[in-house]
Length: 122
Image (tube, rainbow, N blue to C red):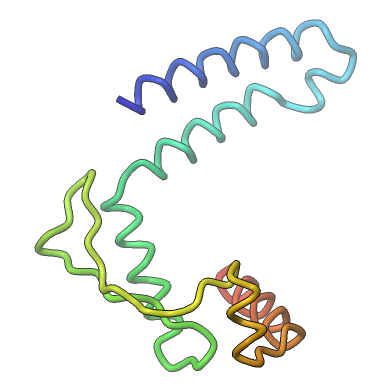
C-alpha cells in the first residue's frame, strides 16, 4: 500500500540527507538528517486516521463556541486506523470562487477569518 511507497521515498530522502550532510559545506548546519526524520514521522502520522480523528475532535472542541469555523463531528464507533467517518457538511468550498461571488461573499473578511482560524489552531 501507500505505506510501503512512503517508506521507500523516506529511505531515499534519508540517503540524500546523508550525502548533503557529509559533502556540502553547510550540510551539518542545515541538519538534513533531522529534517528528513521529522518529515518521515509527520507523514506517517498523517496516515493514521485514528490520529486524524482525534485531532479533529480537538479542533472541534477548540472552535465549539466560535462562529468562525464549524468542525464536523467524528463518529467513533465506525472509525478505524484506515477508516474515518464524520458528519457530512453541506457548504460551498472556499475554492468555488464563482459561487462565493454570486452569494455576495466579502473576500477580505473571508481572508481575515481564515488567518484568524489558522493562528487559533497554531
